[in-house]
Image (cartoon, rainbow over all chains, first blue to last red; front, side):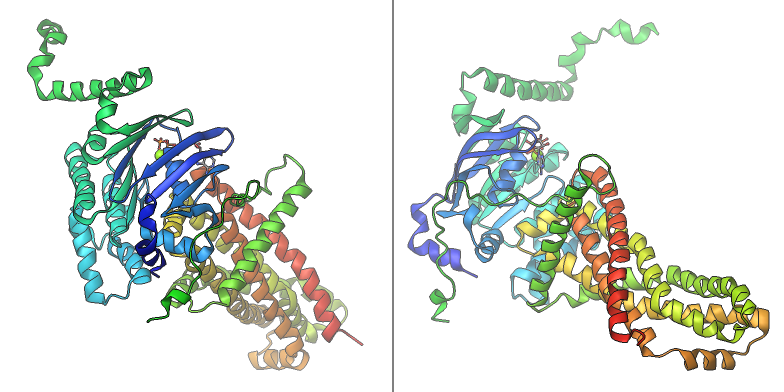
Length: 283
Length: 289
Ligand SMILES: Nc1ncnc2c1ncn2[C@@H]1O[C@H](COP(=O)(O)OP(=O)(O)OP(=O)(O)O)[C@@H](O)[C@H]1O
Ligand SMILES: [Mg+2]
């Protein structure tokens, strides 16, 4: 089972953890045209971009759920698209994947969902598994939902349960597809902190697909921004803030606008001038 | 273990050869629509089914199996179909007896009604009717269930976690179908005879003892066994088609409905065609002369 780990000792530190070059994929129309990303050991990369630009597709390419039309994906120096089935299994057991909707197995309870992963990939006893399950669920504040069926959970709870399930095996690389979308701001920031904690405490590298800039700035070392099939930005988060590119400025200022409005709501005095007092009483 | 190094070849993959990229997942072509060439669609579908079914035997060759899941599916597929099969079984027996009475009377062959009903039911009616009805109840159900798991990325999630969704979801359902169908057919055979006897009792006052005697005198295992045996293959067909349609379902929730319909249409058609083949084979072995 530990082929990749063994291999790592000898050679893989020479390679970045993940290196994807010139990826292209088309369905009815081209989705990704030329996208390259690199993730180093223990590093977090944010992938930003408008809805429908192929962010989820990019994540699926990395775990070979989809095959690129061209380009290469190297995980620890091994070409993901050419692995044998056995090696692909091994690679996948090292990568955690949080799906956009959580993707909980709806015939099992939350606890069984996590247990299913542990049962298949570890030799732990029932008690040890139970401990790990509770620990993972506590991390996402869902310990009391352990015996609930997925259909009894809200969208945000499903996502958090999905997150617990994908980290219970302590992967080396985590792929998060919009981990904070649809969560209330408090839960969102606690999830962002959790992701950051996994990186700093356990050294888990991650790719975070998100629309949420505060999350991106909290967790990521670097960012890639996709637009119309190409990466229009790739670099450190600080560079992103100071970029002169028109698309980037628009993208950032649109989110900035949202944030200002949120803050406006928090400080009603700032909002007063826009709502004339007389307007309220006129009726 | 000290020889671990020898267990697997190193994972260093050969450099990408251009023009040799892996294929995209199979798309189940629609058989319920009528656009495009029907023949191309059926051939593509049969090709896809063939590959999908071959994987069943590969999985079969690699135990251990997911026994608990098989039992769970047996309950969902077999046990929960019992009420439907009960009705079908009793009604076949009753209707067949009522329909054949006038003709048999005309030829003075009233005494042969039980045998005639038993032979018709065991050879053809119970196996085929039960299987075709279960194409809807079970085949479409499986397709809808797996289709919605596909749409909500549950199958992808299993794939990504190296949990072998084929083994866990598909193999277990096909197995359950192959076990449930023969059992349900035997059950339907039995109920059809009861239905037939009830009608005989009503019309001619025949006692149960006489009815059983009459059936036993004219029915042997060559009427019974091939009928039950072929439902193993029908069960296989229902399982494979249902799983294939669901597993390869496309287009989110809308695709789920289409997968379910296609599963029911395709599997019932295949079963009827397969039946012709089986009848031919049975007659070759046990045929007259
Ligand atoms: N399996 C597939 N088959 C066909 N088309 C697909 C498939 N997966 C994705 N697409 C198409 O690729 C495009 C990109 O999809 P993707 O889900 O990656 O977008 P996204 O960037 O994740 O958007 P969002 O932020 O809304 O999640 C979409 O137009 C989608 O319709
Ligand atoms: Mg997406």
